[in-house]
Length: 118
Image (cartoon, rainbow, N blue to C red; front, side, top):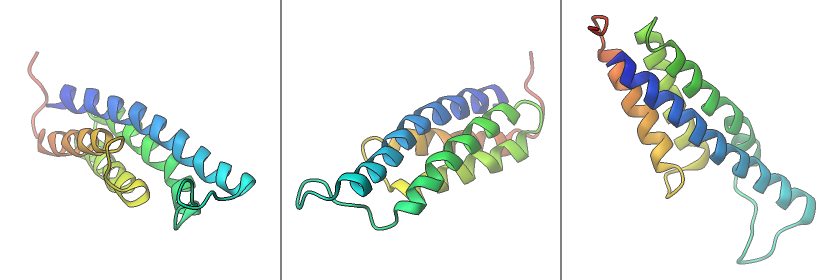
């Protein structure tokens, strides 16, 4: 389970970085060039999106990296990453996989009481 949490956390972190790049870039683009009504409008909380564009993928990557050695702490970080992605970006076609992967990885890491057998 620890190995699965590691892989899920790394994939969630990489996919979360892609979502974060676009989320941050979108809010910057609207700030610099203005809104286009009914086409491109600013999000309600651009500072939240910008902050969690960095924080949430980092938590997923760190949680995945820690899943083998300190599984419970890694699991908490993965669950925090999933919650942060949902809080900042909501649930949609591009966020459903990093949220689900980080959440499942967090559950598996927390449930991994014994070390994986080799």
